[in-house]
Image 1 (cartoon, rainbow, N blue to C red):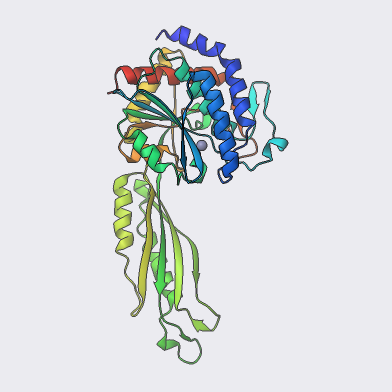
Image 2 (tube, protein in one colour):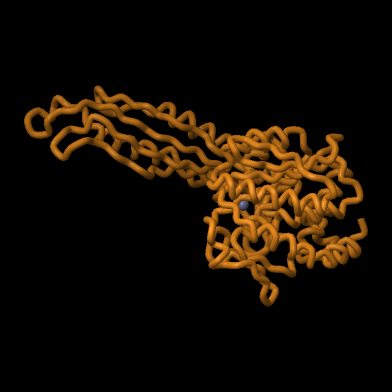
Length: 377
Ligand SMILES: [Zn+2]
C-alpha cells in the first residue's frame, strides 16, 4: 500500500468520518437500556452498510443487539473489536450536543468509542482485499460484557490478531497492557452469644474478619504489580451480640496469568484463625490480564508502520482498567488496544476527540490490517 496515497485518501474521507460519528453520537446508547441499544444497533448497521456495502449480522444475546461483519473466513484472520454502548444516560445529548469546534469534536460517547468504531469502518473500506477481516461491534462493554464475552472469545479464537478500537491513552498512546481482575467475597461463619453475659461462648466473626484482612493483604505483591484490596466489609446483627457472621469483598488486580493463578490458590487456601470459625471464599478471576507479552509484537509492527506513514513516533501505555481486549488476550490471541480516537475525557464531562488525528489513525489501522493479512506472523 502506497503510504502517501493512503494518508491522503483518508484525509479526503474526513468529512464523511465526521458525519458518521455525528450520526452515531446522535443515537444515545446507555448499556442498561435495551431499547436504546437496539436503536443504536440500527444506526450502526445503517452507517456501516452505507460504508461497507453489506449489512451486518445481528446477534441478539439476552436482548442485546451485537453486530458482526465477516468478510470471509479464510486464514489468516484479523478481528477488529468495537462496542456501541456508552456510559451516558439518555438525555446527555441535550446537555452536551454533538459539535465540532476548532478541531475538537464533542458529544456523549464520541471518544469511548464511537469515533473508534467509525475509524474501523473507514479503514476496512480502504483495504484492497478484506478477506479474513471480521468487524465485531458489541453492546455491553461498559458493563463488563456479560452477554458478549463468549461471542468475542469465539470470534477471536482462530485470529492472528485482535485490534481493539478503544480510545487511546494520553497523546494517542496505544494500550499495550491492561491488568486482569479477580473479585472475591470472604464469608465468615462464627457463633452468636450475648456480649455481656457469656461472650466466651461465641465465635466472633468480626475478629475473624480482622484476621483475614491482615492475611489477605500479605497476598499482594507490589514488585509484580499485584494488588489485593479489601473493600466492603460487614458483620454482626446488634451492638450487644457477638457477631455470628460477616463478609468481606476483595478486589484483585494482576499483570500476569501466573499471578492471577497464584492469588486464586492463596485465596482458596485461607484458613480460619479462631477455633470454631468457618470460612467460605466465593468468586474468582473475572477478566484475564492483557499482558505486555500479548501486545509487544503488534505494537512493534504498528510503530514501524507509523514511521513509514510519516506519523509521529507511536507511544504505548499500561493501564489498570479492563476492556474486551482482556478477553481476546485471555484466549491467547495477540491483542493491541487503544487504536481508536485521540482525545481525552473518557466517561467524563470533557470527553472529546481531536479531528486532525482521525485520518492518520484510520490510515495506521488500515496499514496494520493489510500487513497482518499479508504476513500474520
Ligand atoms: Zn470503551
